[in-house]
Image 1 (cartoon, rainbow, N blue to C red):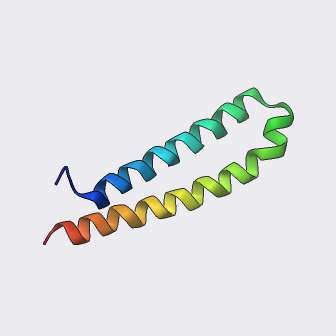
Image 2 (cartoon, one colour; image 1 turned 60 degrees about the horizontal axis):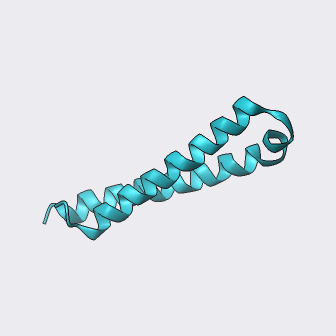
Length: 66
């Protein structure tokens, strides 16, 4: 199961979500112009990335049982 390409892609998607979340939290903590300019966009990107990650995880579970 560790060589399953769908599981590897799902893991990469989760890492992308973590990176976007970290960038958003860092911008929020720093505040200023970056936060005002990019906070909503980063939140939208995170939600879209989470949706894709969840779909990939569900697909890995569904197709991995066979």
